[in-house]
Amino acid sequence: MKTLSRFIAKFTGLIVAVLSCFDRVIFKGHLSLSAPRELEYFVDCILKVRRSDFMKTLAPQYSDRLVAHARNWAGKAGRTYEYRTGQFRKDEWAQGLIRDRRISEGLVGILCTLETCPSFALVPGAKRPQFVSRPRQQRVLYYYFLDREFGLVHVRLQTWLPFTVLVYVNGHEWLAQQMVHQKLGFVQQHNAFTQLDDPAEAQRIADRFAKLDWPKTLDRRARQVNPLLRELLPGYPIHWVVDPAESATDLSL
Image 1 (cartoon, rainbow, N blue to C red):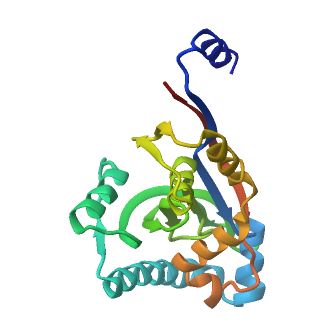
Image 2: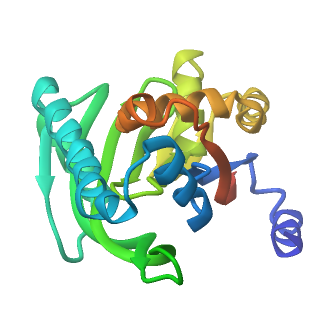
Image 3: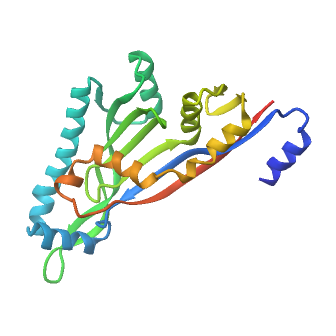
C-alpha cells in the first residue's frame, strides 16, 4: 500500500480518479460434518446405519444424486453439462458459452471434473471401524451463473461428504452491475475500470460490497446446487468463511 501511495502522489497530476474495491472473493461454506466424530454421530445417531454400509452404499448414492441434479438442471434450462478432466481454463469455458450462445442471465453451464478433495475414509478401530479425515478423488461440480446483481459467479461443490461448497464472486463485476442499474457511465477493460463518469458515487457503491447480506445470498446459491441440504441435512446450517479475498485500486488517467 505504501508503494501505491507513493505512485499516486508522484503521478497525481495525471490521475483523474482512484477507485478502491474488492476484486476476487471466495466464500467457503462447510457443514458441521467436517470432523470424523461429527460424521460418526451423523451416521450412528441420525441415519442409524452401519458405518461400512454408509461408505459402500449411501455415500456413493449421495454423490450420484448431486450429479443427477446438475444434469437435470442443465437439461431443463437448455444449458451445457460437460464432464472434463485434465488442465483447462474453466472461466474461459464459461465465457465461451456466454459468447457463443448469447447468454444474458441465469445458468450458463455446469462442469463436472474429477479432483482430489478433503473427505473421509473408514479404517479398522479397536471396537468398530472409525472414520478418519483423508483426501478422496471424487466428482466436483462447477456451476456458472450470470447474475443480475453479481455478474459472472461460479459455485464449486464437492460431491462427497462434507459437501464443501465454494462461491466465487468478483467485486469489479458486482460494481459494474450496480453502475449499469444506476445508469452511471464507465469503461471496463478486463478486470479494471479505466474510466468513471462519477468516481465519487462509484466509490460509495463499492463501499457497500462488504456490507451485503452475504449469508442469505450464499445460502441461496448453496441450496440451489445441493438438494441434499433440504432432503438429508435440514438441521445442518452452513458456516461461511472468506477464503481468500482480494482488493484492488483502479486508476483512471
